[in-house]
Amino acid sequence: MTETTAFHTNILTLFPEMFPGTLGQSLAGKALEARKWSLNTVNIRDFTQDLHKTVDDTPYGGGAGMVMRPDIIEKALLSLPRTGRKIYMSPRGKTLTQSYAEELAKEPCLTVLCGRYEGVDQRLLDAYDFEELSIGDYVLSGGEPAAIIMLDACIRLLPGVMGNTETVSEESFSNHNEGQLLEYPHYTKPAIWTDANGNDHAVPDVLTSGHHEKIKTWRHEKSLEITRLQRPDLINKDDK
Image 1 (cartoon, rainbow, N blue to C red):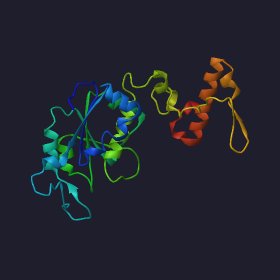
Image 2 (image 1 turned 45 degrees about the horizontal axis):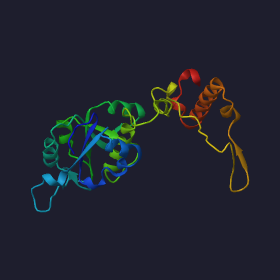
Image 3 (image 1 turned 90 degrees about the vertical axis):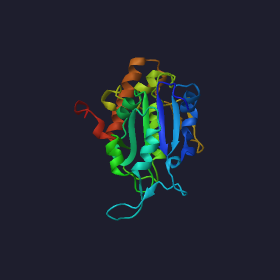
Image 4 (image 1 turned 45 degrees about the vertical axis):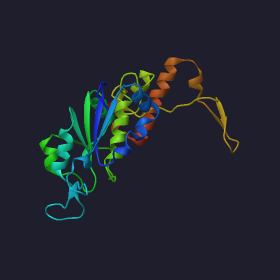
């Protein structure tokens, strides 16, 4: 895909057919069609020279599994007209946060390397200054699902992707959300919902009162309550 957008992403992968995946649907998909961001997938196997298109080899020092070769990945990387900031999806990397996503969303170009097998030769990562980024304390079969999650977190922050800018500023972990609190509960119609067991559930009265200051206060109190319960580490000392 020709790069003509303010947010362009190159994906280095063994499975280009996995993209755009879910990024081609909903808000991200509409934004892709509207050229608010662009995507270029590069198949690393295209840069091999042997009959079997081998991209990996046994690790020096022994051990289980295979390691992706630096020379082949380098050829794929150097085929790009522009690389921008380079990210390697790795369970040992810095954990993705909302503030990290906000930072990456401001980059005009990202190149994302998706590893497989036991990972990528460290020399390639060092030589080309790849940042290692994790989406959590668990291991996936490859970097592609992690890359999709990371990009989804970034794309929704791009100008014009979300319809209401207040939605972003009030979300959990947002830097614009005081203390990075978790988001307050949401309710919609009907005002009284009767579940399948015949129990009535009413929307909190304050939300139907029309009193905006009371609603704002209630939402902040609920955010504090939920954050204290679920993620007390996020709360400012003054709020504890």
